[in-house]
Length: 130
Image (tube, rainbow, N blue to C red; front, side, top):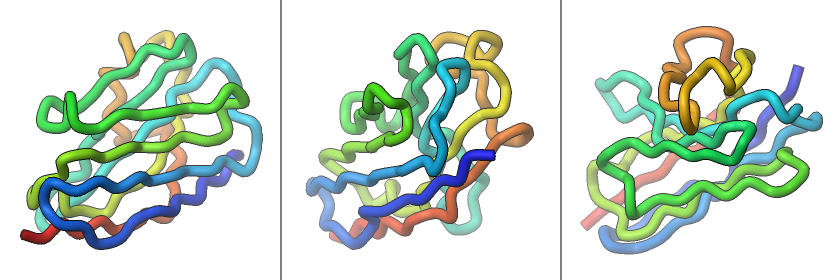
């Protein structure tokens, strides 16, 4: 089973930028989704951005146009570039890999809820302040 390690979290002011990185310990096959989820205090975990095996991407409405995912050709690293951050982006961010083929999770893995058959990293905290 793949192990995921995140890095790059920290504190940033509103309007600033931050880049999160995720490294997979084993090669991620061409079949699965990779993505970033986040959980803010008192809220449910939500999928922020995901990338399917075919390279298609899907974003949470509130981050579309501000956040971008980048995956390397080996599919073992996944970065999340966060631009123009907002207070409401404050959360713990988790890198994740689905254990279901991306072909059944919709375009860009838009149907990936993370509630089952998902491998998680340990999380990295992002704090946005004014």
